[in-house]
Image 1 (cartoon, rainbow, N blue to C red):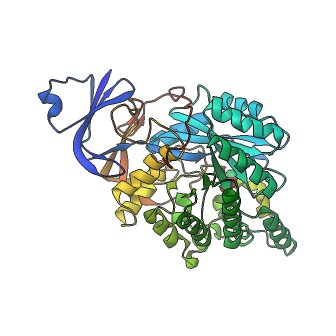
Image 2: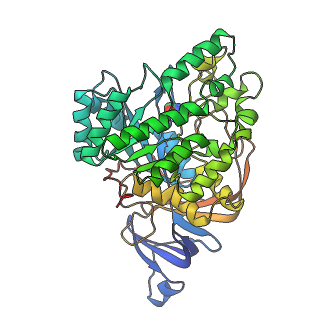
Image 3: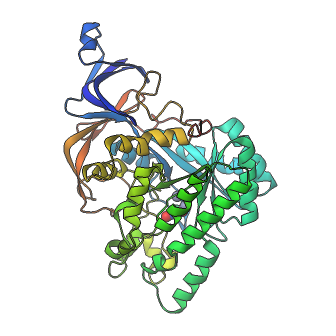
Length: 470
Ligand code: DUC
Ligand code: ZN
Ligand code: ZN
């Protein structure tokens, strides 16, 4: 089966050009100059018209939590609903987190994640492994996963004592292991021990509303933990360290300083930290703010975090935009925290909206088109060893997003929302541009405002080591 995506402007992380993309089976066969296909007598089985549209590598979201058990409930998107929503949003690969908690066997936990995802995903997927209990057995398993399972990145938590938390000694040991295998440590950088003290004190004062989630997780808790993680990574032989879901300007400064020192320190942010705030969202009256309880938290608009995060994206201090997609419905899920903000399951759903929200950054002049492609597709692929993804080049997987810059997207549960959630964190947002057509390994999965893919099309991708450093 051959497909020709024709007459579009092909975008990459480094430029744009008019041309056609020839797909043979699941891979990109050639990039052709306009008119070249006719001149060569190529008669494809299927044509996708991209006139007046951009043709870019499909989005890669390297931070999702489908079906994550958390806070006494489970993230509301299954691998099926979540990957279909991702496809609607122009995403062709996710990397989700398999979870190991203290006392559990890593291999069994990973097998459980494969069982959840296998045969259910509409797009390709990989796994990072959360190590919630660093000990001799899990350290051995880390090495095994790198060598045999295509898992080359491990998330540790400096937050959530008693759940996923690792102390500094455990972090150092895991980092030393990663340093030996060449794998990546991903860090949830918040000082969870100190945060728990602030949470208990707030609740004792009767401060129970959702907004107190942010007040009890101040920016200093993020920047202190980021600093500590960086120092530990240096001691562990300059192991590649990737700070997840960065929301605080002060933490970004720590990353920038480490990068200036030549350390292998990277970071991501998420659309919620670029667009949503403590004042406008988390502080909404009554229990409404629960929709925006996530960690790290939304921060005050007045402190300049959003401005600095956009700047960090331009400067490559932030290399990646992911979503930390972790959806919970208000009904029966977020509601668990009525009267006690600390019991609200942490998470925002956004896997469907990252490409359009970041394209809005292009429209408003925060990013170039190329930087949009780079932060949402090309760098995520390189950072996490997805060797055949994130580029439109001969030999790469034919994961392609055709984007209509003249289109318009309304975000909300009534307008365009396929995530399994009873609300949208971005309700009422209207942005320029629109997902037109999405191809996953050469198969059209979204076109004409219709999902025509199928659960089970998506395959598990064994990842290599990060190539971002090479
Ligand atoms: N943060 C969230 O908001 N949800 C899940 C876990 C996390 O670290
Ligand atoms: Zn986290
Ligand atoms: Zn997360």
